[in-house]
Image (tube, rainbow, N blue to C red; front, side, top):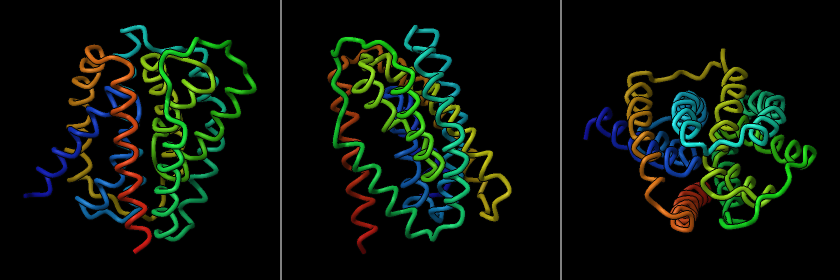
Length: 245
């Protein structure tokens, strides 16, 4: 199978996840770029930020039109994560690739420890709690080159009590801002990027994200939660196995 076809196929899967779940896109993009398309971990992290920034912004518009974005909560999360995202991204460019791969696996597994529980009653937005959680998400975004949606959705549900669909939509605002900040910090790094792969990958993600958003409107919250958990568990297992070899 040619590299372009692989990039299109992988991008379609990532886009469906990002559009339907509001997260999970980048946690799938990094291993796809490494294991299917031959990117080094550092290059995969940077490429993932480019892809996820473009697609999350597109999916955010669709979720906003559907009324699934809680702007006050999302803005607090995103603003708190900007500085940590930049600092962590700068640090990540100085670490060995094996460390980045192992860290990615560990954080992905951590996201499974407290899966979202749809159906909780919404809680008042506490600025300190939102800012603290947002700072941690920003650091994860910058360090690992992921949008942070696989952590943002459980945090928005578990910490602030947003329902699953609102958490999925709001997380896209957080992902967009944090990814832009982390990408800015990585600009100028010596990591070469293969745009012949990144461009079709990103295009497929953007198109599939719209289908994912429509799919989310037809699937119940608990079903989305189960899909989210299964995807994270499978990816975490793959990355952990590889890091141990």
